[in-house]
Length: 91
Image (cartoon, rainbow, N blue to C red):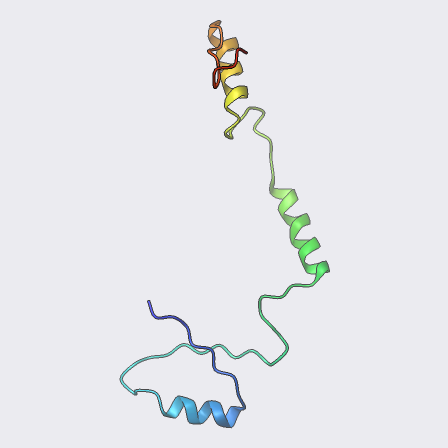
């Protein structure tokens, strides 16, 4: 995939630049007014997005991550087996 090219200039300069491109290809153009970076977010917008994300988080009631020691302890309780040493350390 080709790397995107950023062109900065006036509408007239953009028109001239576009007219110089090869006609056999198709192009995708995004226009962002100067000073309005599409990747900058306000503190309020970030806080609102965080709040919306928090509403979607649920607890399954059991470990699902990579807490190996916690998982080992759960398995030992479930199957009545003593835990094996982890990294040479006794449980």
